[in-house]
Length: 223
Image (cartoon, rainbow, N blue to C red; front, side, top):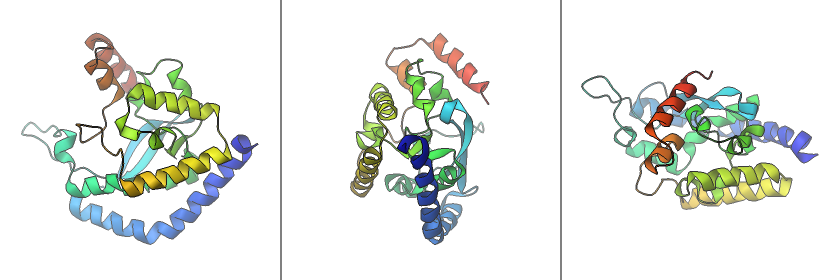
């Protein structure tokens, strides 16, 4: 009952209320992002959602558009400013995702929406994480977030979709608030930004460079 009917209704009502209440604050953040990081202030990116349907994710921008002499974007760690780190460490950059929840692209609680190119590196069992709406926060986020392996992260996602409940969602929301307040597990140890699944598999020698390149090409064809 909760999973099929009540969860979506609560998602809509709670996210709409939060959006209205936080709108003045979000406007201030929007202006600050424009001033400190440039435009556009809202970062948009295609992500796989429920049943692997592609949707546009909204976040506050946290990196500059700095490029090298050849016109290529500099590495993430060089474009992530102190202000951007603050937005990430407090999860303020995630607030525009309330719009995604209102639209029905996402849920308050669920597996975090990963990149399209992450999805193609998942096996059939791991891709079951897309059987539900992706979430603003999830079970993996309160159990290590960016400081656990990809395998652990996806296992938590699968565990969540197999045991969705109102009490479980409440516990995850409360756990997320505590994590944000304590600023825990924001960064992957030794890295400024989280590592993509394909890069992780290649670095740990779990796939070959040939397979990596083939999967990247596959991801580019998904729309």
